[in-house]
Image (cartoon, rainbow, N blue to C red; front, side, top):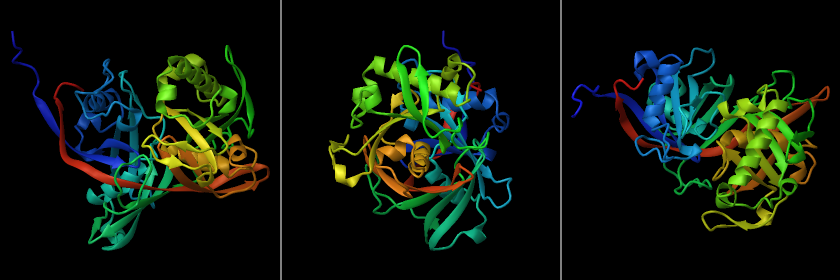
Length: 396
């Protein structure tokens, strides 16, 4: 018997955007149903349904998600309540197979889309937006309490979306958006290196003890040497993602590293914190063929980095992990800096599965403590679709 009393769908204004190598559903806070305008179970339930999670099939067919960590994302923006900022940016990493939205970190890639969306949504004071030229949108990243500056190109009063800037991992060229992550280190406890060391020994029961660099800049990240865990550093996604034992080993490293970083008290808590920390492995430059078939030459890059996000090898590089790479590369002695050849450097170009990315950081040492003033990288962003998303009215 058909149930004729099921709640009808409701319609919520939303914009589907690509930012860097990610995409997500963007909401203006004021457009959300009132109960979802505040953090809590209702908001999480709504976003899970929008994205199509939890999905035991792992496809997110009944939602807006793309069934990868890069495409299972939601963003909520509002006029900033902070002085000297234009917009408050809240990011939710939506689990694909679990009923869980992780609010513990930022999405660096989508940061590039926040500026254009904020301008188009009327969240930025018109006096700060040039008709033509560059609009600097001052973003308060509310998940991590940090400032991000997005340099959005303007054309005839609107964000310029088309252009010839190419970003490895994104098929079509677009307009370049430079993103500056200001004071990216989370120095709770005084250091962007939570243990106080540039290199630590991490003991992982059953696997052994590994040298790691654990840094909290952009996003908490654990770096390990590729050779120490049996890899070359030139791997593409299938080499890792089709090897369930490898994934289990990476998750063990991540869980034990998270404890040593002070992010969780016990390894069992790692499963409830999928978005942070990240695990990445580094090695000196080598030539390889990227996932699109493009040759990456050893002479084009300073080092190789492969990173895992939400339990799988990422197809390119998470923007926040790129900030961590930039910060760690700028500090002599870290595993990232060693892989890049050592010495002091204010930028590196690294190879990832989809190609290469250049990132920069300004680092300074004072009283034996390293700090990073800013990390910068170029991204692009584009509106893919705008209008409304629909969800059953009783799903949240």
